[in-house]
Length: 400
Ligand code: LLP
View 1 (cartoon, rainbow, N blue to C red):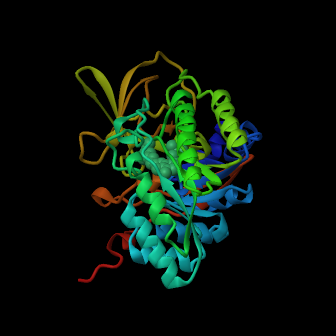
View 2: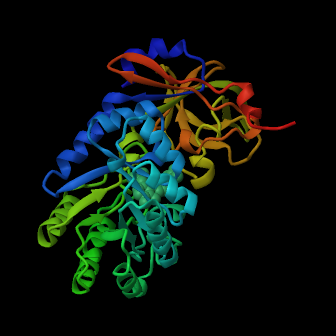
View 3: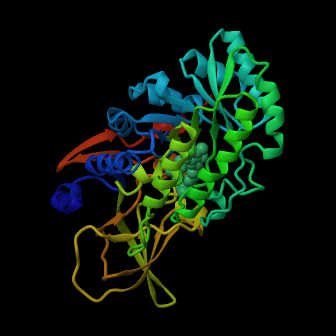
C-alpha cells in the first residue's frame, strides 16, 4: 500500500496513523461476498476505529454500526449512520444512556441480564417508543485467543446464562414496548480458527427452538464479531468458508437473518502507525531502538503482549539483527517487541503494521502525550482526517 507514497510520508511529523481506504473497502467487499448467501447484515463495531472519516466510508458501503455507548452513537450519527442502522450493545446500560439512545432513534438493543431487560422496557415506555431486543447469551465457548478477548467463556461477565432463559421468556411476554426479536452471541475477538464460530452458530439453534416453543418468534441472530487477522508475517488467515457454510445453514433452516458485528477484520490491516527512531542504545548486546510511538498510540502490546509487525519505511541494506523496539514513556510494558531489523539510525522511519483497529480508540494522554493525528490514503492521495491534539486538550474541562 505505502509503496507509492513513501516520499510523501517522510514529510509528515511522526507519530501518526495512516488508514488505507481501498483496503477498508476491499475488506468490506470480502465479507459481503463471503456471506452473500447467508442473509447477513453487517454492523461495524465502532470501538475498533471511530474516526468519522473511516465511519463515513464504512457507512457508504451500506454497513450499519454496532455501538456500546452514547458517545459512539453520537460519533456514528455524525458520520451519517441512520438510527435504524445502529445497534446498541453493552453488558449493562444506565437509564440515561438508554433514554439518550431511544431519543436519537436507536431501536435495536441487546440485554445481558433480567434487570437490564426490565430497564429497557421501562425506558421505552417512558419515551413511548417501541424498541427491539436481542438477548445476549453466554455461549460457554472457549476460543483460542488472548484470555482478555475470550468473552464467550463460561465464567466471563458477558451474556445471560442459559438457565435464565425461561425467566427471560416469561418476562418478555409482559412487555408492551420492548419486543424480543433476536439472540445475540459474541464469542470473543481475534479468533483465527473457524471452529468456535461454527459451534456458536450451532449453539443458537437450540435457543431459537426454545423460544419458538414459548411462542416467541426469533427473527434475527446476531453472531457478533471476532474474526481474527494475521498479525505475524506468515500467520495463516482465518478460513471463512466453513463459517459461511454454518451461517447459511442456520439462516436457511431457521428462516432467520444473521447480523454480524465485525470490527478488526474491516480496519485492522488497513491501518499503520508511522513512527521514527529517536534514540539508540544496547541492552545486553542487543540493539534497543526507542521510537516516538508509545502505548499511548498503541496499547495492545502492553495490554495483551500483542505482536505488531514493524519494518523500516524505506528498505535498508545490511544484515538483519535481533533488535528491540520500545516507546519512550515510562512503563516497562511500553515495548513493541523483538524484531529482525537492519541497522537503523536516528530519524529512520518505521511502519507499525495492523494498526487500524483498537489502537487510537484505546489510546491515552498518559505522560502528557498528545493523541496522534490520523491520515487516510486513497490511491496515493493522502488526507489529514484528524489533527494532533494540542496542549490545551490536556487541561480541557478542568477547573483551577
Ligand atoms: N461485537 C461485540 C459484542 C464485541 O464485544 C466486539 C469486540 C465486537 C463485536 C467486535 O469484535 P472484532 O470483530 O473487532 O473482533 N481491545 C481488544 C479487542 C476487544 C474487542 C472487544 N469487543 C484488542 O485490542 O484486541
